[in-house]
Image (cartoon, rainbow, N blue to C red; front, top):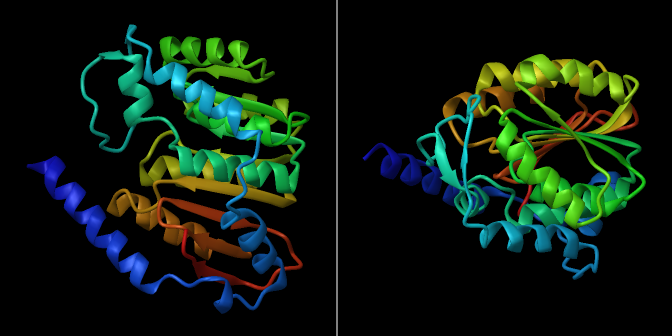
Length: 265
């Protein structure tokens, strides 16, 4: 019953989002118009999607059962400690549409350094890295067994990605140090609680470059995540935010005027 009521709540929020979200004709900022048309709404079938989607197909057919350690998933549906890899890929991993967007963001921005919070089985990571192979990508996964599956995925795709294993609370500083305290892109998809999201945002914000982009997963997943998103939008360092419902995107560039967009995706 709880799972059904939660799904109903998400559906209600999504319908409201679809009815109120704007499109490119409502964007007056040249920078955001360029980002929206060239990245968010780009329907080109890039060859670079292959790494991420090959990784997805491998995971969806993987029958192995692994012991999983969870750190604050924010009420996701999978329960218990033993799970099939294919079920993790189906329920937890970055979906095809969002993976393609992550690819296009890194292809467009070409960030030197990327931090991903929440590796899962490595599908989102593969998309992030494939958008710009020259990027230094550091991904953090709390579960050692899940991290091992992701690392195997990276080897099979010939992707040079650094995996840090451990609770994000204990390992984020290490990842920031590996980026030499100059982060260009962060994908927040780990601990889906308000407190953790705000904490990780603040730590990454303080080490972000002026042109950094932050991408947040599941911003409408719960009341706590919506509160976290509202606080992030109000942060004095944040210039522009884009609400795509399932994802939230943040820009810090001083050249931008303070604006919050809700755009169709």
